[in-house]
Amino acid sequence: MLIIRDRQMAAFIKQACLDFERAAMRDLMMIYPEECEEMGSSKLLSFVRHGVEKALRYQIDQEEDILSFLYLAIENGESFDQDPAFPACRAILEHRSLTGQAKIDLLYELFETTEG
Image (cartoon, rainbow, N blue to C red; front, side, top):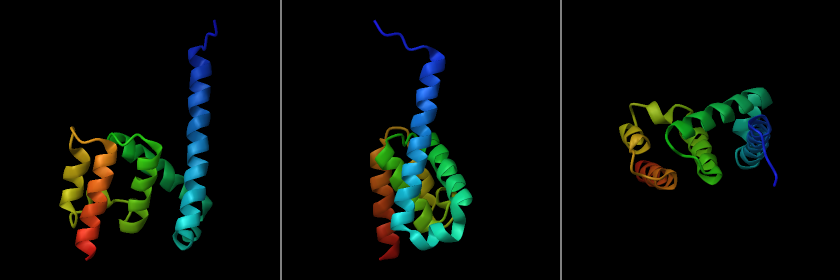
């Protein structure tokens, strides 16, 4: 039987996080090249890390949903979740019974409505 020790698991988790950060940065650079170029790589990495932390605090924990949260942050401002101009964002994000995907879907609907 294979035994994975806590230290080994921590190393796997750390590597998975680093891999996700790199993949998210590549994805963002492909979709939002101007915004990412303006940030530069170190600020972009910080943006991704901060966005992941915020998404996880709101129980958004699936990779696809975290990426969508990062897209929303680039499109609407890094602090869109705290912006007084969008009070519904905070209510959606802090809603305990909604899944991460449901929160993202509602946020996209909200921003589509406010733009149109």
